[in-house]
Amino acid sequence: ETGVTQTPRHLVMGMTNKKSLKCEQHLGHNAMYWYKQSAKKPLELMFVYSLEERVENNSVPSRFSPECPNSSHLFLHLHTLQPEDSALYLCASSQGLAGAGETQYFGPGTRLLVL
Amino acid sequence: QKEVEQNSGPLSVPEGAIASLNCTYSDRGSQSFFWYRQYSGKSPELIMFIYSNGDKEDGRFTAQLNKASQYVSLLIRDSQPSDSATYLCAVRGSGNTPLVFGKGTRLSVIA
Image (cartoon, rainbow over all chains, first blue to last red; front, side):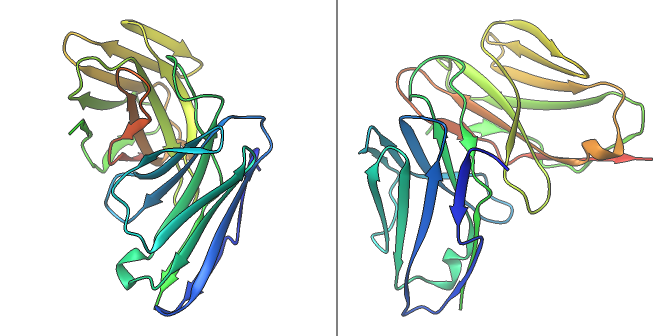
């Protein structure tokens, strides 16, 4: 198991539900990320937080709402999702954003199915 | 739009052979380059990173970078069936930018 944990690992929700994904990193990192991985598509960066401030919103629909209460925790709040939002949602962290060789460490992901 | 291109595969190699995985990128100012391995149903795990032209070796893995050609590759020597996975190339551009990932190449090592 890595230093980045995610809960839940699997989630099934209807289009009218509201749910939240949680990510926690135990590595003392300052930057955290949400990615979406769909079948046959590259990893898509959704949001980036650095020192609890959002620094990147990669044109993500408003039905996805991130929250970073502190540098160790990151949430993704979900509401009125569509079936095409079904995917693996990965959280990652890194020490910082800049610098050659900056490494991202991934959590195990949440497999989301929207019915 | 910064792009990272990989052949989706599958790339099939016999056990014991050298597997060669290739990646090209569009941002000429890119600074650092990463290779991740992702087993089916699992999250990506970092194998290597490289940021200087030339070769970088780690065990059976060698990363090769040619910035003039905007090309990075990963060689896996003595391939094993356990190396069968999808290999993701990721590139960090110039400035304070997050990684951009390719779609990945699926490698199958045949025993």
